[in-house]
Length: 227
Image (cartoon, rainbow, N blue to C red):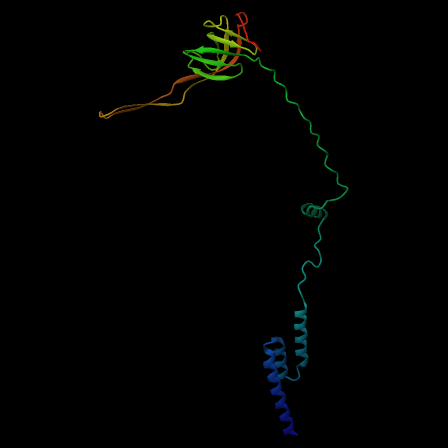
């Protein structure tokens, strides 16, 4: 009997070792439990406990947001506003803005008239309300009012006042806006075979004036234009 029992124990141990080797690659926890059972036959309860704990570990899965977070009323309103959902039906609607169209004030129509005036040695076409650069007016300061008396011609839509050489009693009124200088002009002098070169810059002084009106031409003989 002793010999037979010893042979059965050897067979059981060999079978257990082979099972431990096979199951090591598949489940390390199972192999650990089997090895413990091989070493101590009375600790099957311990191995079963380990197996049950391992099954519980594998069965448990992390659950994200199983219970949705609770917000306060103000935070819930903020979350709904950010998500784009309507906050509540009882909220007051924004008051409708009333658009009032303001008509542009119509500017008074200017008299359709022009004149040809001589300033210095040059002739300029002037129209009331416009500005132009003329030769330097000596002694005139900014915001000074000037009167130009050399009026060569005055024209309207239907008539013309042609001076011989000037329109008598006609005058152009203007206001000085700026005293400045023209753009620089380069004066270059050169003499060949003499090593002579001169580079000089010049800026001609000018005056900016704004025309305010043309008067005094009504008493001059008129030349009517055929329409």
